[in-house]
Image (tube, rainbow, N blue to C red; front, side):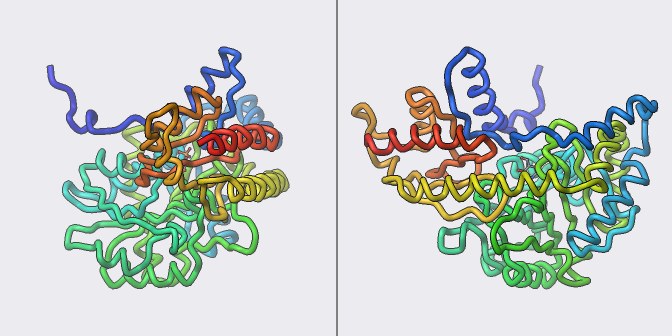
Length: 396
Ligand code: PLP
């Protein structure tokens, strides 16, 4: 019997596959360094864990309202106000089962079959798959090194057709670690408003910004852009809570209502215990977040400095998140054991098999010649892994 053609078109997540391969090798006792991680390597802070234990002990283990508890929505509303300068009331907020789930809710709520969604590359590999699952068409535009792998307002305008429904804007960016400036966002907001499309602003890494850079939420740049933006964030990266599965959106009341009813049928409420933990994360002390950011910053500087000094490799200094986006073009031109390396996937294969380092080749992020290295591993691991990569590139 036939199965869903739409499902068959979805690519399995290659980042999860690489992380799984590195974990399996480690379990076999092989000393592999994993640069694939898409999650902080820190434990969830204790105060957050305690809040979850209290939730269980006090019997907070039943259904909650489908789009999240009122107390958590109010906390998210305060966070949007204080951190992002955004005014979303509790009825504009939908708490979901993680950032991925929020994105799925959004595209189910705003798109019709055949709608186009503009996705700037390099992109987080899940975006095109979710868009396709919602019967819409990903339209990819490409950032360049000169623009910090970001796209310009002009490029976006050039990609807009009468079928365009939305633009996905991810800042800080996975996989590049780059951050859009207020000026760049103002120019993009102008195009979005003039062409009357939506922006899906994925700000999942908003807490992880280093140096002089500041996070700016595009929805905060005026009433017209606010009306057309769905702002999406979550607890996974900022609070090292990837396994808890809590994400949230701020949007118009109309879109929030649609997403709330979709969610009420597809998953019901996000986990009640995780919601209590999320409340503590947002309202409790923030020192663990600051400590994580400082540690990431030190690793970022170290990794960037090392890669800059390696033969054949090139990268920009990341400004946020916990990834370095490395240009492998010169490596691909070289031969290994008499055969041209050719693709980033082949380079990644050599690195894991012969040098015991797991990296993420970026063809599924829309940039074929690049590799993503996560610095969400210990400094010791980073040093060891970079030594191995250096040994590889120096041998070519
Ligand atoms: N957005 C971006 C850019 C991400 O990199 C991720 C996770 O890797 C997410 C959203 C989703 O986070 P989660 O579903 O784990 O909350």
